[in-house]
Structure formats: structure tokens, C-alpha cells
Image (tube, rainbow, N blue to C red; front, side, top):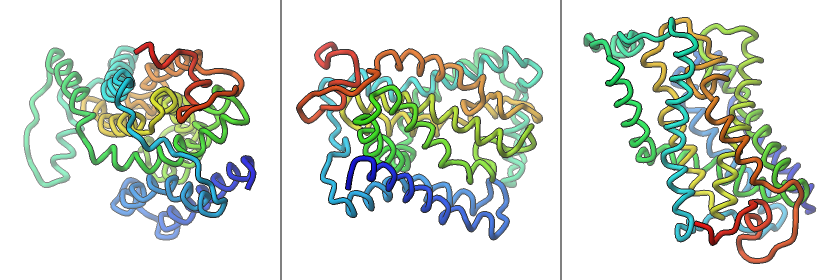
Length: 313
């Protein structure tokens, strides 16, 4: 099977599996973000890995999947993966509340509602600014320790970054391949967005604007995941970063009033909330080569896609 054939096969298999996986949500008219949605979203994360394995089996492909940890010499990438997602999420939320101070709820009414729904009538004390800063720092430090999120992220990173990205790079070069990889990743989330993934409640143009915004977020965060993978020659830093994002993405809602604009923030899936990811994505794009080149060795993709030498760290 040709390289183009593998790319089209992966995209086709992935989107078919996504359709089959999410079909029960539509047939059973599932409650947005209800139990069925949560189960489907977990299964969804392992579909890219399954798609990659299916295409590799059909095509007889024996190429690598960036599975080696490659920790030696890549400490910088692992540290970035562990702590940047939390820091950027908190920075985006802070920017959102600066622009929309009326959405800041220091009484943490959202947390009180969650506790009430679970049958716990607990009065949550109002938070102070120093407490919010301390909580943000603590969440940033804790995020990479939520290992279960990294395991779930492994399925997506294996498929999108470990398998598809090198195939795209061979024909398109680093920059275009990374962007296309992110766009395709975002579009795959469309059925879940229809049932409240990242964009809950009423918002203008739902669900199509939510799908568009999810695609934007997947693209800019995908640049980060791709950079980590290519620079380290391993998908594991991307798994950690992906898992860290999932660990902290809902946290800003704890201090957010009802009626917030999900398309803008305060979560990183909103345009303002993802501001840090956008800036980082733009900066990292300059380190990607426009066109594919020639290189040898087990880390051949990193060698010509990242415009810096491995020995710099």
C-alpha cells in the first residue's frame, strides 16, 4: 500500500470507527455529558490506536510508532509536557476573567451545585485571590500525576502522532503535516461535541460553532503534541501533555458563574482560554521545516522536522 493509501485508509477507518462508536448517542438520544456519553468518550480515545493497528496489518507496514520513551537527552520535552499544559490553562482562564470579570464567581457556586447533585449539602467558602493563585499552581503540579489520563491519551497519540503524522510529513513537510494532523484530529471529535464535550449549555451556532472551535483547539494543541513527539522521537511526552490538559481543563469552571460563553472560555477549549496554546503553537511552528528532507537514523523525522540539533539540551 502506498503512503497516500495508508493515510486515506487511516482517516477512513478512524472516522468509520468514530461513527460506529458514537451512533448509540444519537439512536438512544443520550443525555449530554451523561453516563453513556462518558463511556463513549473513553472508548473514543482508543480508536486512533485501533485504526493505526488495522491499517498497519492490512498494509504490512512495519514502521515505528515512536513507542520508545527516549528519556535520555529529552528531559526538556518531558518537563514541558508535564507542566506547560496546566500553566497555559490557568493563564488562559486568568485572561478570560480579566476580560469578563462578571463571570468570576469567588463563591464557587458551580462547586456547590456539583456537591448538591451528589447528595452532599456542603457549604463551600468563598475563595480569595491568593487562594486561587495557590490552587492554580497546585493543579499545575498535580496534573502530570494523574496517570489514568495519560493512559487514555495514549490511544489518541499513538494513532494521530505516532502513525499518521510521519506519513503526512513525508509528503507535506513538517508545518503543513502538523496542521493537517491537528485539523483531522479535531474533526473526529465532532459527534462528541454535539453531546456537550467541552461546549455545554446554549451557545451561538451550536453545535457547529463548537465543532469549529474544537477543531481550532485540536490544531493549536496538536502543534504542541507533535513538537514533543518529533523533538523527543517518542509519543510519551505527548501522552503526558495530553493527559495533563484533560486533568485541568474543567478546573476554571469551579470559579465561573453560570451563563459563561463556552466558545470564548474560561476552559482552554474556548478562544480566549486557549490563548496561551495559540501563542505557543505559533512559536513552535517556526521550528518546523516547510518541506521534507532527507535524513537517516531511528529518529529520522525529528532530524529534518525540527530546526535544532538534538545535542543542544
